[in-house]
Length: 220
Ligand SMILES: [Zn+2]
Image (cartoon, rainbow, N blue to C red):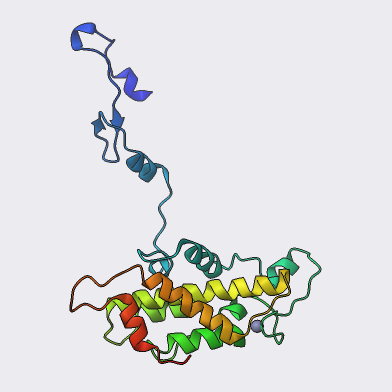
């Protein structure tokens, strides 16, 4: 409105009216950019340290979504449900020895920890037992590491989180149980299926699946 007071009255001799859009640097442009507009409207926050572990090119969207919620501690775990007033048991349905919480499920629980440590240790020694520490471990390890191995570890972390949460839900809602070995094989199958869709780029460059196979000794 202040700008309008500085403008002269419309005059046909100065040309026809036209729409202009002001971009982030204050320059008026004839084209509208939804990206530019969104960047001006949204609140910018610093990038969280685990962002690259949750969102990356080879990710599986439903795995990333569950992992994102798990890292933010926003899954409806039993400790949260009880805090909201629900009258339900507190015990973890996977191990029956501790109360269920995000910290416990990912990965202090003997069930999920066994799967995570078994598979992740094939790529890097001493996998940590918390999501935050695991993210940092993948991104900031001290060993010289192929970028493809990092991608495999990100997918593996998400796959274990997803299958742990799925198994927890199956036990609660369907009373069907899978053993640690069966769930580990499900994680392994998921990994192979996903990695299969990324072929190697050159003759001397192994594919993600070839690297995965080279690290895992069989039988599992
Ligand atoms: Zn447990």
